[in-house]
Image 1 (cartoon, one colour):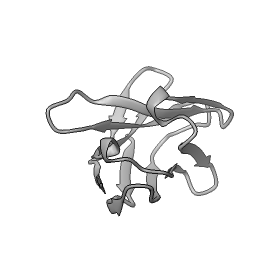
Image 2: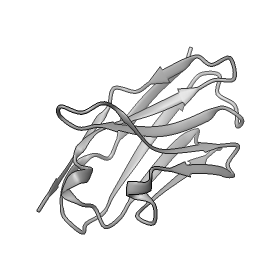
Image 3: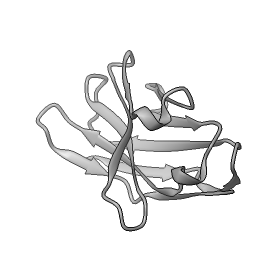
Image 4: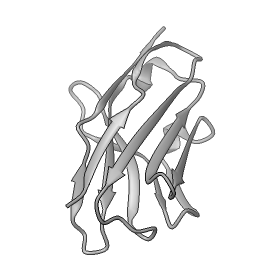
Amino acid sequence: QVQLVESGGGLVQAGGSLRLSCAASGSIFSHDLMGWYRQAPGKTRELVATIMSGAFRNYADSVKGRFTISRDYAKNTVVLQMNNLKPEDTAVYYCKCRLSDHRDYWGQGTQVTVSS
């Protein structure tokens, strides 16, 4: 069983920064895929960034150059550093873990609101 708990959301002005953290517990290994997704009101959930084995990173085009995903294996956390935030980044952000057997686990989500 895997549990994911997000933290770090909040309200920020456009151009500001936020750091989201996802604390993971359970049987998670370095080769398992960890990532961040987001869902804005009235829209479908979309990929923001993923990381696997500490070296393979993937970003949505809309966040490239502004967001950075990293993983701390010692603390079993996944961090999303978000810089130069825009109003269109406003959404609920979810942490996700995909195990090697393709089972997916989600966190409860954390709200990010960017004011213009």
